[in-house]
Structure formats: structure tokens, C-alpha cells
Image (cartoon, rainbow, N blue to C red; front, top):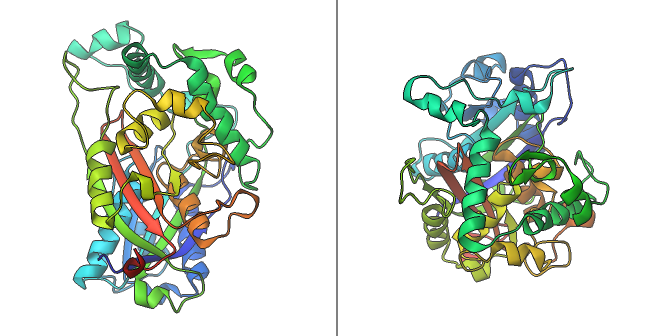
Length: 386
């Protein structure tokens, strides 16, 4: 048993919020999370910080907030897998007795007025032997994911329409999320008509880019039970870092670290895929949702596209997935996007988008180019109720 629970949640304004630094967002998110839990900053003895593309979120946040005598203070960076890794580290510290109440915070401010969001994630021009990638036109993150999606398509017959089904279902969920950037209905025809970015990915296959910050407070489950908000119990966690090489025989594009990460988290929680009632899946691209669902065992390998096309992931479907709209339609704060929604769902605070059964929620994080993966299993129920 982990003995840990999430007791506080803080989310700043997100999206096209200009004129603020990532550090500013981070400080606000910490304050909001601590207040949400009904605590004060003096009650916190651990702080884990993570910085996005724009940087600027570091250990100095603690001093800026006036936090003293911390027993745990460190930066964590597994890219989009950071949120899950941070909650894991916080829970382990609490279980070991080296900390009592730990705040995990992420913030980023890559958007600038007058600059396209896609330009924020351009990769440096490769030199030397790596120059062959630049010569091939692989100059940004989307190009790498397009290669992965193309390989999945060629291996399993996945189609662009099936990718579009993911975007459509998540937009339907976003309609019930007041902080989502895109809430208007989306049709498959509109997805197919959106401009190509890197074949086979279209504009509506790609996530948003956002400014903002988010934080959670992790503490002992017994303590969380007496605080302001309903506790969100941490049942299990896991990580997977496959280390794919750019060589023949690699599993790149076909499988991800979700296999190892999900297996570990579900084993710790004492559950299987069939026990999960809500899925909050890292969705930097529509393809990422499909391959992750497959690797977690929600369908057979290669059947993720058919699963999405069936409507199972959408409101009213058998497998509610990315109930806040995800990074595709809501906001993009790396792995904190699915984590924030998971906490909201576990508390029963989802409003119109609240899942009917929130008893077991799986949260995924994907970092780099499918290089890192984290998984959490969360529940409103205490661990002994499993």
C-alpha cells in the first residue's frame, strides 16, 4: 500500500495568457494547490518542481514563496512523463517518512504574442551524422511523431479517419470543460479537411500550446481525509523508458513505455485494464492515444484505431477517455493536463463531463519522442477498498 493521497489541486489561467513568466505561473499554482487543500505554505515540507520549454522554474521557487526548512526539494524532468514521476517520488518520500506534505508543480510560458505555437517546438538543426535527419525534413517534434504514426499505420492498417475519431471524441468531452480552449463541436469531416502538418498528421491531430501552471499537494492518506477536499488516493505507479534506437528492428512507433509502466502501476494497485473506469491519456497527438491504449491492454495491439472509431472513448462510450478534452482540445501542460483532469474526476467535480464511474482512474504521461512513460492509478476510494 502506498499510503499517499492527493489533497490539493492548483491550476492557473491557461492558454494564450501573455505577460507572465513560467516562474510566476509556478508560484501561483503552488499557492492555489495549498489553499485548495486547506493548508498553509508552512505546512509543506517538500517541493518538486518541473520546468517546460521556456524554463525558469527551478529551486528558487521555494525561496520566492518563503518556504523554509524543507526536507525535500528537487527538480524533476522526464518531459511529459514528469507529472507521474513527481507524484511517485512524493508518495515514496511520504511512505519512507522523509516528508509529510509535498507539492509537485509544473509551469511553462512558451507562447509569445505574434509567434506561431508550432514554432515554439522547433528542434535545433542537427549537425554531423545527425544532419541526415535535417536533410530529410525532420526539423521538429511533429515530424518524429509522424514517423511513429506512419509506422503504426503501415503495420496495422490504422487510418487518418481513426486518428480523427480521437480528436472528435475529445472535443465532445471538452464541451463540458469551462477551461478548455476549444469547446465547439468537431466533426470527422472537419478533421479530415484540416491542413496537413507532417504526413500523416493533420492540424487537428496535434495538441495545443499553452502558457500556465498546475500543482498538486501529496500527503498521507490519513491526513488528507481530514482536509478540505475529498482525497484522491494513489493506488499505484510505474515508469518505462524503452530507449529506442534508430535502427532496423526497433519497436519505435509500434509499442511504447506504457507497456512496462502500465504493467507496474496496475500490479501495484492490484488491478487489471478491465478494472479501470476512466482513462486520462497523454495526447500530444491523436496517434499517441491509440498506441498508449493498446499498450495498456484496453484493446489488442493494432486495434486502437478501431476502438476510437467505435465511439468507445467519447461521452456515453464504454471507455471514457480524456474527459476534459485533453491536450488536443483543452490545454497543454505536459503530463499535468491528464493529472489535473484525473483529480477533478476522482473528486466528482467534473460537472457536465463527470464520468458515471470514477472508481479507478488511470493517468499516463509520455515524454520526449516516446522515450519516457509514467503511469498512475488514482481513486476516490481508500486502498483497503480495492
